[in-house]
Length: 207
Image (cartoon, rainbow, N blue to C red):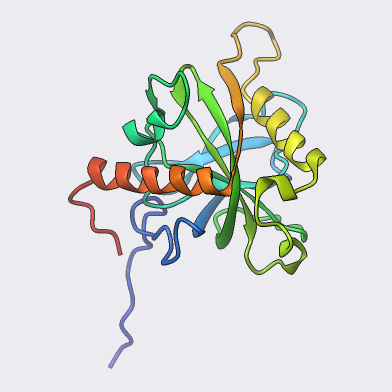
């Protein structure tokens, strides 16, 4: 008798879960690490990582970066972002801080939500949730974005303000940083993105 197993891996966006304790603690699928000079992002059709573009500036990602499965930036997320005309139609992005270096992508981890960075990309809501690796006790003291070192938060904000810059000057920067927010607002954004997902993919039951 052979063991039972899945023949195909779950799609990271649709087949994984946001987590049993979302929106306080979420599952994150990591697309990029702080060592990546190229931006990778999930291919929505296949679920594999696709090369998107070289990083626009000399700055490398300051944290692990990916998304929360089974979330979608739609009308509810846009309603929480001043001046947003709509959500960007992607899963909700997340930045995860870890004291120890994690140097590989395509991993799944649990992260405790502490805040977020509110962005507009061409008028579309493009929030970046900020969270801490739950198994990293170095960050146990931080319960909100305001508890993190100011330099750490500023580094994240600066990266996202410039990461789509065209250094040749041929294209304008489409990113506007609206501001940052704490844990309570971040949980509201995640809850909105989970509801947006359920509306956008009503027949997708996942795993």
